[in-house]
Image (cartoon, rainbow, N blue to C red; front, side, top):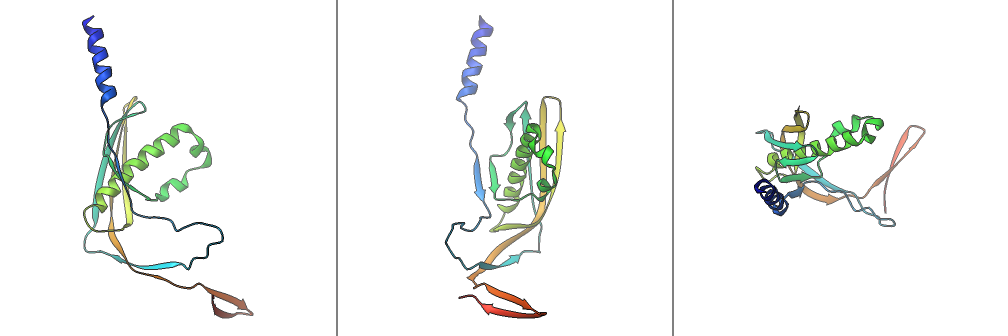
Length: 175
């Protein structure tokens, strides 16, 4: 009876706990709408090469449940290594789950790297990933290094049309 009460109390307390996560976006896509003509927005990017930014994050999973890790993430980060996976691997549910987990840890590491200063983007990030697999327990650790950069001098420029005719280039201002 004592074990039953202890077990029920543990389940109730576990179900009443909550977790908090914070996401911060660092990049965005332009407006996509039909019949809307937008001049491209240009910006200069100032890269701070005086120091490398570093961030590290670890998350632990028991079966499919996340039991530990960071709760702050950088949204909008693209990971070029995901593009190399084959279609068969991408359709495998286990690989999809592992990729989502790993991207979350990468996002937390990028957030930590970028949160140290007033930066808009992480330039030339290098990710180092370690996955420790203990049968029903997994631990993901990601470290990232890169340079912080800030966008400046936002402006719109009209598109130019280049027409090639017999090797000659003609530049026509779009109206």
